Image (cartoon, rainbow, N blue to C red; front, side):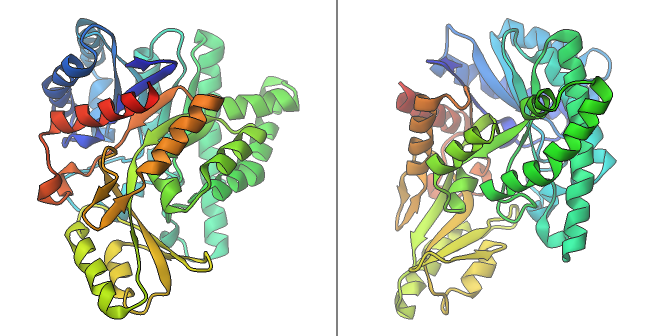
Amino acid sequence: MQIADNHLTYCTNIHPGESWEATFENLKQYVPKIKASLSPDRPFAIGLRLSDEASRELVAEDALQQLQSWLRDNNCYVFTLNGFPFGGFHRQVVKDEVHHPDWTTEERLKYTLRLFDILSVLMPEGMDAGISTSPLSYKHWHHSESARNEVLQSSCLHMLEVVDYLYNIYLERGKLLHLDIEPEPDGMIENAAGIHSFFDTWLLPKGVDMLTGKYQVSREEALDIIRNHVRVCYDVCHFAVAYEDHQKVLDNFKKEGIKIGKFQLSAALKIGIPVEVSQKKQVEKALLPFVESTYLHQVIGQSADRQLQAYPDLPDALLKLADSRDREWRIHFHVPVFLSSYGTLRSTQEDILTVLNLNGLNHYSNQLEVETYTWEVLPEDIHLSLDQSISRELDWVKNQIT
């Protein structure tokens, strides 16, 4: 839905189901209820998550036309897709498999191009549209510098195939589409520094060579083409877990011409770590309900002298808690954005407020997507019905903007 100059949606990765049939049933079950409570008389936006399986089924026969008809009949529109999780994302062990297949593979490339074919049909007139994607790969799969450089190089070449594909769509049909890289702790691109490094060392130099040779454009035109078609998915939870200074990060992106494709509005958990071992037991007690087997919940701790310590998952961090010198932990566990605290735990909700304020002042992107996908694995006392949960989150964001 449009709020002021922004388009606000929620990501349907909240709903379990990998087939197109299951995905479509979820849309039909939940979207009309949510729209009725938030945007009864105005168009309602959907941030669509499609697995590889669903994307294949959607482009077959007349399924895409059926979706278009349903969107028109229900006064809904799609301007963004979540193309990060390739396969199953609920009710199974996901963990680091969320990165598989990674950007070194043809499977990831073909899946992403198929998603762009779908989005190019669904996107509204007069808007650009994007697809969020994996930060190339999972860094713990690659143990040497040479192995990581191979990942960066092959991922870069595949992404430049996407740039070429999207530039041709723009030339032929005037539709502006972009691939939005989503940094995440323990991804090959983890943070803002990783984005700058990937653009400066790989994407821009190789892309300029490709585009100037193929299209006879100038170097500056080639840089603009790349920056238009490859952007950042700014997941606020991920940047908060990394203790990033949002204003500094966004200012530097703007200075370097790196665009924000969309902001994913999400909140992480955080908790202060006491010095006394006996008091640390209370921290462990507070965090144990969030230990679950589906998703990775990376932890980054910060010491009194601001040194950072990363842990691959919450159980790994808890094993080191007694001896830890950290004074705060931030945990990659997407909690409801309308909660600022949960018992002794706090959320990084203030980071969302900061980002919304900065975006209101500087207009980095007009695309906002709430992404809390963990409702099924949250402790029972935070649960609401799914449509109530989504509506409450969107309403909270709407109120912050207005």
